[in-house]
Amino acid sequence: MRIFNFSAGPAVLPTAVLEQVRDELLDWHGAGMGIMEMSHRGKDFSGVIHEAEADLRALMGIPSNYRVLFLQGGATQQFAQIPMNLLDGRSADYVVTGAWSKKAYKEAQHVGNVRLAGSTEGDGFSRLPVAHELKLDPQAAYLHVCTNETIHGVEMFDLPEVPVGVPLVADMSSHILSRPMDVSRYGLIYAGAQKNIGPAGLVLVIVREDLLGKASTITPSVMNYTTMADNGSMLNTPPTFGIYLAGLIFKNLKAQGGLAAVEEANVAKAKRVYDTIDGSGGFYRNPVAVECRSRMNVPFTLSDPALDAAFLAEAAERKLVGLKGHKSVGGMRASIYNAMSLEGVEALVALMQDFAARKA
Ligand SMILES: *Cc1c(COP(=O)(O)O)cnc(C)c1O
Image (cartoon, rainbow, N blue to C red):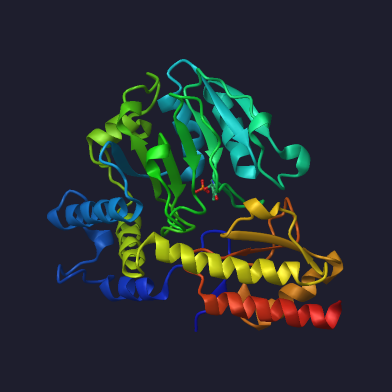
């Protein structure tokens, strides 16, 4: 029996997709072998990766002057890979709005010259900076943001006003494909797969073509966007199984009606959880400013942390798992990614209301 998995990542995947993977595991489309066992250079896998890219392009409306790369090393490797490829001997700006953008900023300092353009750490990462708080360099090689902070539960619905000619680089790991995004506003988008896309080990990079060809000379070729783009993400063996599974997820999202339909479902799910928190008379609290509360990751605390263990135990009894908050913020976190059903969210809401009614 499947349980309701609220883990922040690796995270829940759609049951129908996993059933298809199971059915095709030993024999993919009559090939007599599974995807994992196939040459990445063969006709069958070429079809898989090309279809995955085409479906992703259709889903996100990716313009033709952007390249789609299927890479390895996770989003964390991108923290270094981005400055290696884009700094071009200049300086880049970072906006720090939570644990992940802070890590990206720190890692980039190993590679080159980066500036802190703004931070909300002083407010416990409970809001986004307003325009006048950002000190943006009009000459920056790029401006880096994290559009959904997975640990602090802060989501960017309005992008900062980027100086003309400065490409915006966004870590979308934990909310990519959760709603329509205007790809043309970004120079580069990246996302680790294990939240909304598929299995860990795959990272997606969507990069505007004019940003290629600027990598520093020490950049290893597997980390160089240009050589990876020139080789169709297959300079070396790509994460074939992850790409196959991601492709099935893209088809599943298309079948749901695309990202506008996915967004509608996500808005409804998030509203149920936040309404429950806000309607609890202070028993549950979410510290994030209302206009930037994440639809994907909902951190919340109980009025008395001594009740945390009992809450988690009752959750486990009801087959709700993965709710313990990140160790840096404590409390709880409900990650309600695309693949979390409304049924799962209703089960969580029922627990929260029932628990509060007994313990408040
Ligand atoms: C999970 C996550 C990462 C790190 O991903 P890894 O694959 O573990 O490197 C980076 N950024 C964000 C926003 C994340 O949610």
